[in-house]
Length: 209
View (cartoon, rainbow, N blue to C red):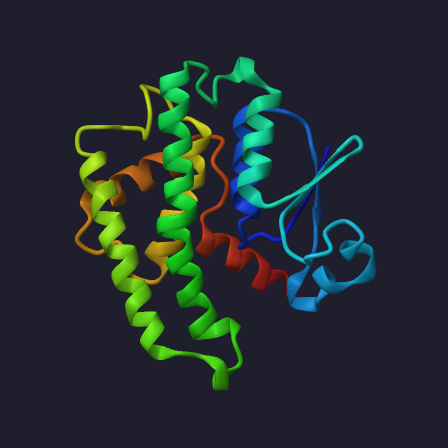
């Protein structure tokens, strides 16, 4: 099994899942700062030129959440995806909530502050995206009152996906006044198998550069 990754990206989610599963894998760094994600050899793996990507035998997967879910399904004995239908439905709901209600505003902010050329950035959408994120984060803040995990009594793959997303939001000051989310995120990253947080991952890349 090979994980193609670049430290500060959503590769963190997949690395976290692999480390929690305690399964062996080969890590292959694709240096985005040097444009390796657009090189022919990587585009042959993921034509979208995005990270992460996972190769497991003949299977090639991209999209971090799809990879996380695949790994949970492959190792059901690890219990990182609920098997009870009702619990699984709640699990799926929170994974989708993270992808649609939390991650999408973060991408809008990133695109309009750093990814798009300056002449294509829309400052007004940054403000709207911040409002959208905060509104949905408040839903999650209430859900995590007196709860340690999104679903059930132990951590699941949904928690790893969410904790990374919250760390991303925290990097741009969107978790202010949300103590439950802060406490949850910090507790998740205290796992002995948790990966580096985004800031540390970014420093590791810059130090190598």
